[in-house]
Amino acid sequence: MSESPYDSLNLGEHVGDDPAKVAENRRRLAYAWGVPPVFMQQVHGKNVVCIDSVTLDALPTENAVPVADACWSTRAGRACTIMVADCLPVLFYLPQARVVAAAHAGWRGLAGGVLENLCNTLSDYGDLSDSRVWLGPCIGPQAFEVGEEVRQAFVESDPQAAQAFQATARQGKYWADLAALARQRLQLQGLTHIVGNDSSMTWCTYSNPELYFSHRRDGRSGRFAAGIALV
Image (cartoon, rainbow, N blue to C red; front, side):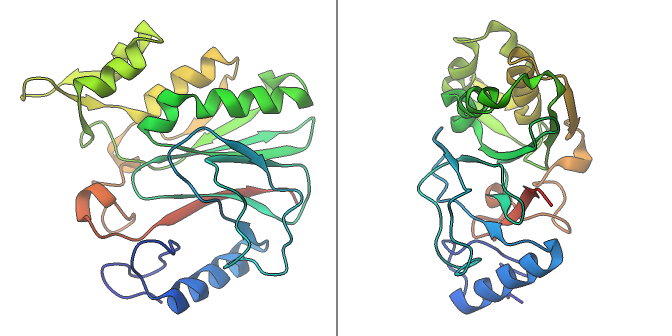
């Protein structure tokens, strides 16, 4: 529905696209999923919210939940939804407790503890060891160049995180592996059933313009979404 540089199914209301076209794109997404997506106001933070009380009548274009970068639900018929265009979407399913959750994990959110906050919340529903986690597409380690301050933000709290950074040809710069950093942090929380993004080129938003929006690649860019719902 949207036109360049947002073509075709841009879901972001905040990127300069025609609001009417974004609304139509979100309606199409809801139809394709069979449940309304519940969008958050993502700010690269670590706040976690429950979407069970969100009124669905005005969705998918209105009634966003409060500012947050992770959410969970115990109710069927609504999708925990993450918008991205280089950051990592992380989806959770707790089969025994019948809980779903989603997190927006850019480097700031990861370093700030968004996954740990969400796991701490989900642990109220029982043992997380049987949880299923899916890592979605994000900017890959062949394209995500960061400075020393980003590396230090991870290594200071976990020395093992150094394995997810490789020095580039530029002094003080590194290739960062977001998916690997997320896997490390999830494993420290006791989660072992982790599938999806394996840090290969196939999952890289930057390197696959025919498949994914990428803010770092294009500057002005749309947003795509990943979501999970109980049915």
